[in-house]
Image (cartoon, rainbow, N blue to C red; front, side, top):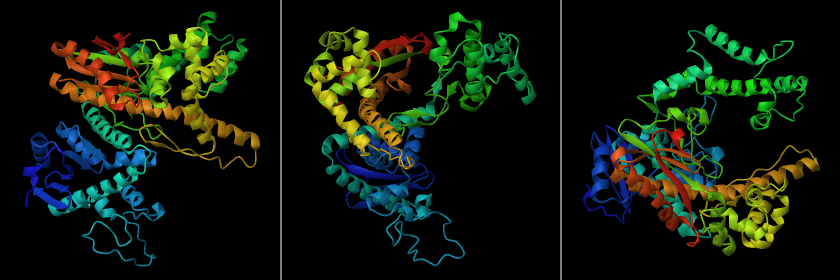
Length: 568
């Protein structure tokens, strides 16, 4: 019996999809299936008619929905919830189910696991998704649930059972309502990631080819030609050596030795350190120019263009969580594009970008999650660091370094003296960071304000070396205090992003890039001004839903550009 006609917005409905087979659905105690060759069209109709909160197992379903461009905003992704509650970034369905049922993960069954010498085990009824030992049957996890409409309905029912168990675990959280809200926003962000993976980032391909050629040389005709071009690129640097020597410029130790012979005794050859010496020696200038060209040639060159750019779009795989504190991440270089490549990111004809960047997000998040009233007061202005500097009696730049140092665990440098002033003037915020650091040092997991578990690690290799043990514990402490803030900032950013995603639909605006604290929104030129207002307005709206402290002010710098490189 089809029970789909009476779905309402208040319903929680689990769904399992198999193109060409049908749709499995579950609500409460009800389980039913719709046999149809186009289940995504049916799902789109059900979403438009009743818009319940959909529940599904994970990314496979998310990708199908994104490919069909179904505008779902309210959802619960079981794999996303698992990553939030358990920590890490892996969430295979068998592991999700086993964790919820307190089953040992080392007993997870695998496809083709039984060997010739293994004793026969009770495998139970293969038409049932759960084995006698309680684990999900691996052939069901591996796609067996897709074979028939009845199996789809059963699979949807299991998703609803898993949801109930996740809800029970969330009830044990110190703030269940907030943790639930985080799962929902993270699930919508995962759907946004699937959409960005499908649609891609607009690229001016002719400009990309020209930029690569200018920096890395012509497209190689063969591997031998590629070696020749690389040697010519190296020769420009080596020509500055007297007498000329062969140096492997890709070996930091050899580069360091080359510079020592030049009279430059440096602790390392990092770019920021060399940049300070660019104007003092033509060898350093040539080396930095070489590094830029080398990076383009090896990471963002012709191979990269051929593999990841098609139809004027750069496509990579996006994820809503990097497995640490939960920041969004992507493959294909989308999260690491150097500034020199930004001119190739160009809006399509008749379109523009709205580029927006959250301002001073980490200290504002610290104010929100700590509830420090004095720090909250500092967020009221466009520049948070100026009132902090006034309160500490130091220059603004020193105050900025001190605040960032407190969140990153840095206690050295010229801002070290201001850290004591932070503790005196903002004791609630600093105490929160200190507690996180102490938990990290003790190898205790920490939790973001939204409930994400950030796992700590223990050092099994110190061999009684007390200095090493102390050093590793200190590193955990720094990681823990930063993860607490980075994780909360990521949660706020995703609420902002999904708000823009939802509000932008009426403007034909699509998010094409989420870079740390920055959004790039592709929009028809006629709607650009409205999109700009929408994106900036969404900052306050997202804060209303996310911020534990309603008085904290969040800000963003937003502008309309044709190319990403035009953003200031």
